[in-house]
Figure 1 (cartoon, rainbow, N blue to C red):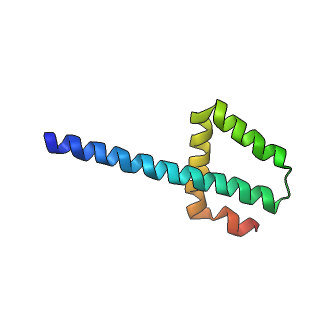
Figure 2 (cartoon, rainbow, N blue to C red; figure 1 turned 30 degrees about the vertical axis):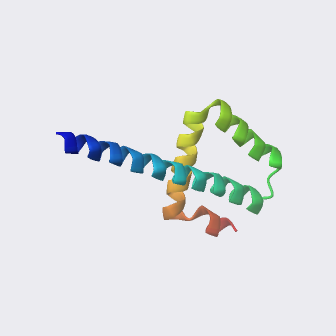
Length: 79
């Protein structure tokens, strides 16, 4: 029983690290799409403000975008 608790904690820590990395990748995708489409910087600022005030929904969307970038490769298709 004690070993499973340590394993479950370790799995949660690895999932949190992967979630952070995919969220950062999602931010990179947004920056890449904004650069490729020559979108105004105001939209990037809006993303960061939204990220600050509505962290969880924005982080989930960026996580999904970063995860999807691994399969669909948004940045290579647009730029």
